[in-house]
Image 1 (cartoon, rainbow, N blue to C red):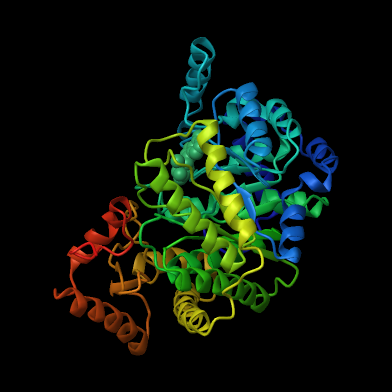
Image 2: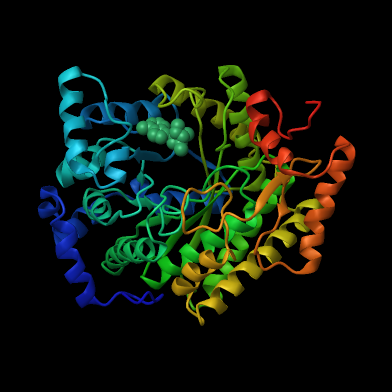
Length: 485
Ligand code: 5AD
């Protein structure tokens, strides 16, 4: 395999497709021509891309939960509850962990045990095991568009079955579903496998069916500087576009400082569009998503609502096209449907109240956005150079060289050299820039911001700040000041 950011040939795709569809018996039920026909019968109101476009034009922020249980009827009941009681605009189908690891036999056992015990014994919906017909039953049972949300390094069969099953959006990417999720999977292989998913999406697109694709923005969800998640989002957008994807939602996990969060969403859209245009993808539509706080949550439900509301505020003030919503059960595990709806309603209230306010044109926001953009461009341009002009190869080499580096990632293909910590205002900065290809001026910017904090806290800038910041939200703070404040 020689990795290249080029459209997979029809011959290669067909050859791979035979292998992919043979991975589990339900693969036999995928009939692409028939699937295209079935997709075309889905009305615009239930198509993910159309609903995002409409919200984007109107300047509205849509709300979307995460949710998935083992059995189709219970899953339908859950989704219906979230769209009626929870007022969700967009629906998810969160896939269980066995399916994410291609362990379909164990998923099957989970389905059987769930049937026997009358409760979900899987932490999501095993779409591959249920197959095309049951996926269609789910997607046609609700009024809103439904997206597949997961965390799967090799999602090829899952994509085949769910897109044939009427889902109109598919989350993930070869970097964002590898580096934060896996230890041993080679980046070269996951990028290659995701080129398949994107090519499949491209084939639907060429047949007249728009499928939204969403690279997973938050990565490890822990003190990820915006330039890192932006670089991954842009890379995955370029990789997807090369396979024929035409509708993208790029994402970012809330860091907690509102200026930085608004600047991140603003620069994310701008940089993604710029790179797509610069590389000849003029027709690709770009929307954005902000993920409410992805780090540790308070156990106390009222306090959790506080965190949820702050995420909702950041999304609304940044004009994100959608916001992914947390629940008051976040610290405990998979939420009940009532807790899930409660998180949605809190978010709905805040997003609606802030619909007429924006911080996008604030001077501080523009200054911060300019820094993020410069950093992101430095990383992307180095990656492109390392790949000899090719972004697929460049991505692999950039990770090997630490040019892109995700904090706290389990993957052995990630350098793990950078160290993030918050500055005095809670914005995420870098205490150690590792091998990031930053100019001296950028390095100094980060150093100065953290020294300012060290001075105020009367302690040296050190790893202890990182540790204190990681635990801060759970203790009721954003910045891990030693005195708490
Ligand atoms: N239902 C609801 N939320 C889920 N998450 C994972 N699986 C499910 C599920 N089946 C949520 C976690 C965390 C995020 C990464 O996904 O609670 O918020």
